[in-house]
Image (cartoon, rainbow, N blue to C red):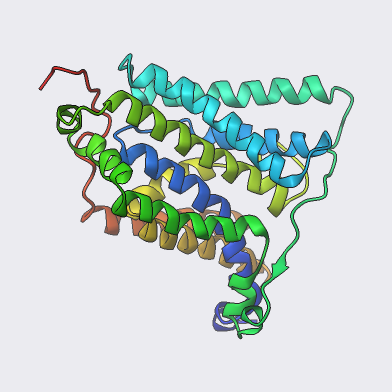
Length: 314
């Protein structure tokens, strides 16, 4: 199979959309945080915690959607910790975010060993299965890629529209964007910048955790610590790539996922036998960095991003 055959195969794009799905959840979560003026570097750890919490809930006997809800609740709890330290107390968002990543990862490891002390290999659960949408799934190329996915993938795409609608068509979205651009104007209208920012970080962190839960409950059927594998840091870059807009961030997630799916398939070609596999593993990250450089030159950063706000200050 040559390069062109790979790009026009339905299996390639089906894999790309599947790989993109957790990135979409987490990128939307980070976008909501940053639109409100808070950089959330806890994303990597929150995704790990969400992956474990959702999987453990299902393994303990709850339903799959209950597992998703548990993962989101755990993510929101870490978001509460992050927002308390960064918004009312004004601590460094960089330091707190890294601290949350370390805290979430360490607590997850501890909870895993506490719950399954004798287990040498992660137990499996009955994960979400692909659901084919009648008629639409029969469309050549596009059908299998977009309409033969698991329910969480459909939810990820729906949320892109929901987040865009809320941000640009509702008073809540206007207040959230203003909190990241001109928080003094928000306070002048009698609204609480602290409440808006804390709420945004909690909701955004919940979506990050759902992105992690996708890995254990949709992409795979078990949990292991290396499964997030830097996806959280990629999502931070995707927010910049998407210029803090949900639609463009979606395209960025699909682009990165396509690079990732492509490198896997190229390794299986004659070319892959002549080149060290590490080169192919590096390829999606390298190409994403190039795309990020190109797109970020024209991106407009929220004016109050990472700027603490104290009522009464100007």
